[in-house]
Amino acid sequence: MSKQVKRVAIIGTGVIGASWAALFLAKGLDVVATDISPEAEGRLRAYIDEVWSALETLGLAAGASRSRLAFTSDLKAAVSGADLVQENGPERIDFKKVLYKQLDEMLPAETLIASSSSGLTMSEIQSACEHHPERCVIGHPFNPPHLIPLVKIVGGAKTSQDTIQRVTEFYAALGKRTIRLNSPTITPELREKVIAGVREEAGSRSTDELAARRDEVLLGLLALRAKG
Image (cartoon, rainbow, N blue to C red; front, side, top):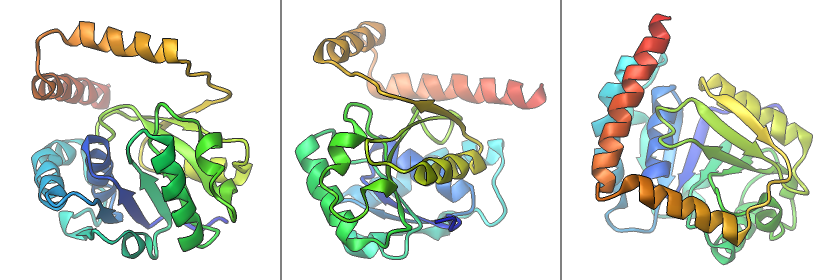
């Protein structure tokens, strides 16, 4: 179970999935992405092209290249040969259970499955896995993953300590600082409070405006940190 992660599969290429893909490429990994949207590949490649200069500023790893990205709409083809799957699908437990049941049947036991989920527990998600639920874990990034060097790691009831250790080492090798959480309780009231707070802070600004300003500030902070 100590296999080194060299090839990553990305499931779901929305904002978080695309950002993960950019980071993995910048760290010299092979990345295969999958998404059922007809426009997904074009949007993903455009996003990576857009943020690549920022990643170059931060420093690329040896072998880092956008050419190491492959895309397919076929889930089985995407995850075949992956050492780790970073899942970024919709926050719906019915969707996650169906997906994880498929992944559990497709993948060998040593392949890690990490979810970017922020509103669902791994215990719920991995309950659909009949073979190897122990290799499933939450690896939730602080957005955007390609800039913010933090990731939360949360196991489920059946997640093994070996999985926790392996995924922690993997994210640390990417330059991430990991935060291990135990027994989080995400109530409907807490979820609504967080959503209301985000909307109040955003005000009339668009998502694109907020993201551009956030990335500008983050790059400045990371540059200062590097000088220090």
